Image 1 (cartoon, one colour):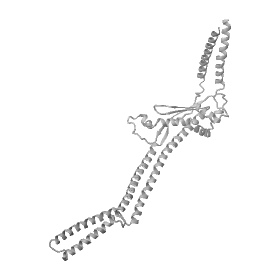
Image 2: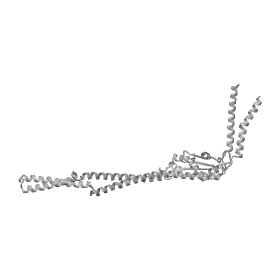
Image 3: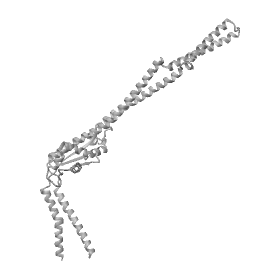
Length: 366
């Protein structure tokens, strides 16, 4: 009975472990096509440094690692695995034909693969790893020939460089365009305010109502001082002359003339029957305030424009190739020994679990 059980166990082991391992090994040796890998190392770096260079020197200062953000590297990593890039590469290198040209039922791309299947297959053939300390991207491209893997890696670098330049220029251009728009609006507002002042001066035939009002006020002050002096003289004359005396009459006539002139000049400031000079002053001050505000806004917008231009140059980024791709000499994939050993171990583990489950079921039945 034990011999019969051992024979069945051996047959089950051969069928479940040895035969599948044999099939896997035969497939790897006879049908699996060699895949070559071409590697490169990339770094996203700002064209203009926005920080002070690292005084400690070293490769960090040379490569500008301190100016390379994690977001830039993450964005580039996502772009390399994106459908957008894969469609570009398919147009440039005809990925479908290259990945489906070999007769490999497992590792080759089906000839009638959809776009989604192409994207999934591509991301298996391309490995992108990010070094969290240096923010460098390690890109490894696989192909069924050394020449294609090299060509694929070079094209990925080319498209990545175009992508980095495009997004950095777009962001910088948007900021500069906004600043230029604000500058143009501020310039137009300043021109309109100045033109309003010129129109007001021409229509009212006056250069500066405030200066004119000050001149009138000064004149009135002088006339009032003169009037006070004349009235003092009048009182002096009346102390020893009669009101009908010629000197008193002449002095009173002079006082009346001065008073009329004071009234006339005062009317220029606050007369209800004539355009009021004080209103002109108020209107002109409002126009001047608009000019001053527009001038300040113009200065601010001009400074913002210059700052935007500087920031635009600082935000430009480029792709630095630390290690350029090279032509592969040996096929690294598929890893035949690793796959064979791993398959043998896994099948043995599965077979052991199956035996354990079978033993438990048999014991419960008994």
